[in-house]
Length: 160
Image 1: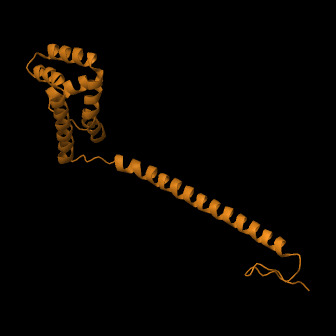
Image 2: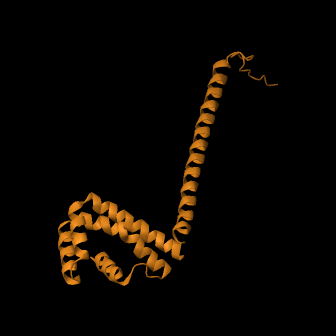
């Protein structure tokens, strides 16, 4: 009853239906191509969002568990103070003020440090960032990581 169109040779056994069949096949192919692209785009977006969600979900657990053993606390202090010493070596004026503060009476040292870092706020914020892991470890581990004379100076410096 119906005569089927064959697209292998591009001809039709039904006279007058060749161009119509080819157009329908082209339309089907275009729709298939659009659907395929949408699926690929949907899968790509899904993978991207899924990967981001996995990264966000995993991030808090990595930060939430500091090493509170004595060795871990000492490693944090050593790392932060080493970074601070390298920073000061690259900033001789700041290094001079900090080094001089060690030999001065506490009120004079605090005043000199405050005056210098008030006039050099970028250096202050850089050093605060470098030294902040010490305070983070102290809070998270509920410990005092520095000797008493440095502990009070540290907290005074970090408070601004």
